[in-house]
Length: 89
Image (tube, rainbow, N blue to C red; front, side, top):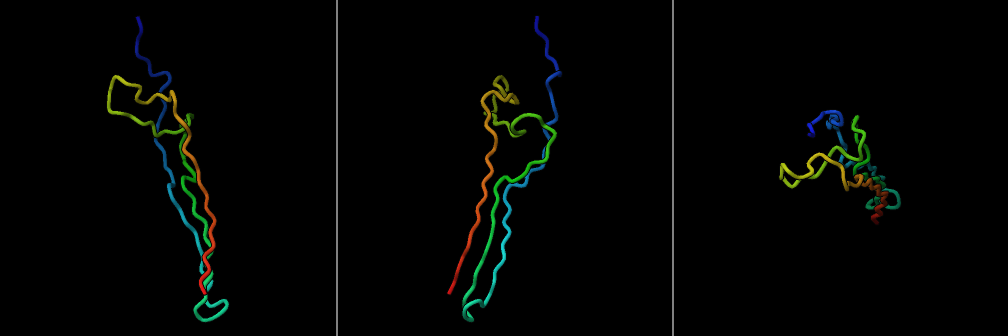
């Protein structure tokens, strides 16, 4: 017989910063109407969790008999960073 066990269960609570943008605009550099904007944008830069797996967000199709909560073919969430420069004359 097989019995259910909580041996492999862990807490799945987390706090994630999903999108963040930081920028600064320099005004009137060349003429009165010229602007220069520098910025950096980050998607999924950090997640705070004690979960030991790839991600505490496990996709589910709603079926209770499926593999809900099991990381069989999960991929880590990608992090994207974008650095930008806008120049206006």
